[in-house]
Length: 376
Ligand SMILES: *Cc1c(COP(=O)(O)O)cnc(C)c1O
Image (cartoon, rainbow, N blue to C red):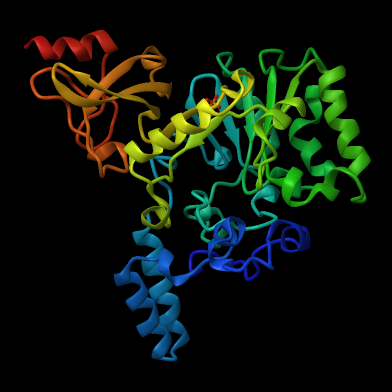
């Protein structure tokens, strides 16, 4: 796809084991669809723009068209570069949106074993330093954690942090083996597909054992919890997942970036899919929250569809929020069969206010203050 600079779709493991090449309809093989871009993932206007530029046989025109299309695709949605990042040049690769969790984008971990067509972090991979999050300076990163006692979690992400050699990982995280080092940081999470896209990383890669030893030390000596935020394609049955210690976490909706139009599912349909899946799962696997929109104010779950004051309504809830006082709060919006994103929602007639304004920013004030505006 034009959005990504990487030529192939993924590692040899992904090619050989995750895609069913014998499938009668490869185009509808889910892994093929998730890993191989097609022109249909662009809007008609962008397809035309790209094809015209290509027909011109002028490489500069093609490059300009690609650049233009990319900038139209909202490379860093939900204020990631403006609202989530500390205003300091040494902290170019961290995001701190929710009080307790800091995201780290280590600069050497900003590539992947495969480039997913729905990736909402595609701007990391187009070679544009203006939109790319990358943290080189590990000292500044650790100093930031020290200055923020409200933090308990670091989520190391990318790209894929397990692309990095252990030596590099240790330059950011090595000190956490000492339990007295920043003891408020209790959970080290890795946002990674390596477990399923390159499992050799933990078995036969040159530093596989050193990696496992390091993770074990973080837990057993450092007293940290080490968690993998992974992706399990071609899911085993949910009961088997639970037996393996894999806990379903979030069901996310396609974000408002990249190929959102191609992958989007209406909120109403997503809620139906979620409810159907939950109904068929063991209670132990009902830990998945969602369907959820990761948007400017926070993570918003579609919790239900109900009649409120005689109107068909979405019942929603903040799972995460920039302002922690909203977390867990329930609110309502008019039911809309075709809406795919939070900014399309409207308050109920004569009886509700949405927690965000028309630009999608969280309204200032506590939930009580915002709800009090209703009385006026
Ligand atoms: C999802 C997310 C987190 C982690 O949220 P949890 O609900 O604790 O998993 C942290 N920061 C950002 C920017 C996120 O989008």
